[in-house]
Amino acid sequence: MPILDAKQVVNAVISAERTSLALAAANTVKFSLGKYTYKKLERHNYPYGLGKENAFGPRGQGLKGDVRGFGQGEGVPYGDSAIINRQSGLFAASWQVTEPRLVGDELVCSIENTAPYADDLALGIDGLTIPRPLLDAVAEKVEAVRENNLIHELSQ
Image (tube, rainbow, N blue to C red):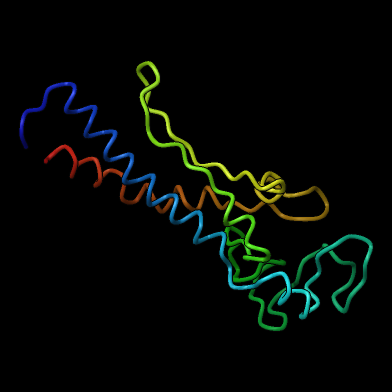
């Protein structure tokens, strides 16, 4: 591995983080594009909405088990609460990425969803919906390759 000066190390770290951030951004969109649109969910009487009843009970409680092909788990299509159905597509289209930059002696970057209901999806609504740990799932995928990105950049 070559000997690098401080500026080269900083540039390598920023480049590695940029690569990791691109992977994270791609995965946030991937996790936001579950295969069911809002229209398809409605056709199958998926229990969204307040104050309505359907074959599964009061709406908003979620599906239980494997119902009409929507997956397994307690009200979770695919059995993975990190996957968000595409519905209207607004959530998937609302990811904002801030590129890595130095702020003082820290490297800062971010991924944020600006859809008006993003926080409700992430945290859940008490008594109505479960938390959706999409960003935790993305972070887990990125951490698996992040160190390799840094090693690769430092060895250039």
